[in-house]
Image (cartoon, rainbow, N blue to C red):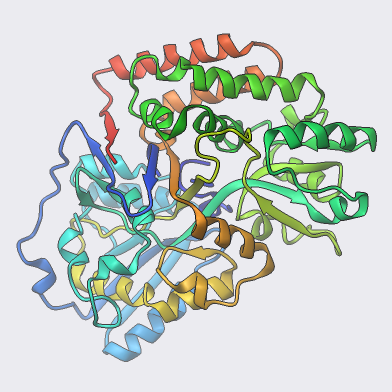
Length: 455
């Protein structure tokens, strides 16, 4: 459930310290420059006859990649082995230690990508991105949505390439809303009014994945912090700027969360629910809305009730908010290991996978959005992706809760603090102070490599 999206896991979500990215802006920077060796002119070498591709096997399976491998092999007269596993990082970790690595891999949500970067285990791809795109025209880097490509970039160097991605926000039970004549709230003020009507009908306005507070971090805390303090407030939080985690914007967001709790808007028992339990309650109409990403349909399709429709929406922020159109995203990064035996082949195969035709097919077959320009527009989108695609296209700023990957221990403390707030065990001021103390500890720990996002 990290910064990368959860369909990486079966679904999350979301890359490294909250990197927020203005579409087309630069990526993040580290205080220490990774030292991954750069083989001179490696993209000018020839692809080898054999290629090993190792992929996380989550909710989307690996059949698409295997088919692409067969097509590429037939076209180029090569041998392509594509394999995967739900816990693939466990199999890859010892291989990175030994140096016997695959040529191309999506190592999944359990892999510490930025640790690999620091260790020089991942190839820097700037040179590759300057080569012609999949159709032989332009530069390969121009094939990607810039705000998503930036999530795998640090200190001006790109190490990770996005493929499909998720958008994180809220869902509302459209069937339930239509039945009761309710309109999805566009603002926080509308949410407060609607919530009382829903309670009167015996429906909880909002449920949440209590066992995994991460959902409420990207679904409640951070969007409302941005609304109150602007994107800079979030920049400062991810950059561990002293005082950022106890800023007025953070306290305001925490106060909004507390207000929902005190008004009884949260489903009773949600604090103890898993992600699938709370999402099932939502689909059954026990609660009208839930924070979750665009992986909801894929994750819940086996138990999705017949006749029930759900629609995506952004978290309803105060009408006077500073940036209410921002979108939280999560990518599923692919990498070429430094010690890959066939790096050129890996580059060419991934270039094939990121062609517009292949990307469009992935959207239509797997029901998720793609990081390749034009794919989401060209594809016949399934109903549950129409609104997310529209919101992404209209957004001026995209961001990802990346601190969850950069600073796992710090992320866990933020989760614990938020759980305490949502349980009614602490108030907004206590919450902010606890977060700030955790940020201080992380900032002052010299053993932790620090990251700074610059936009």
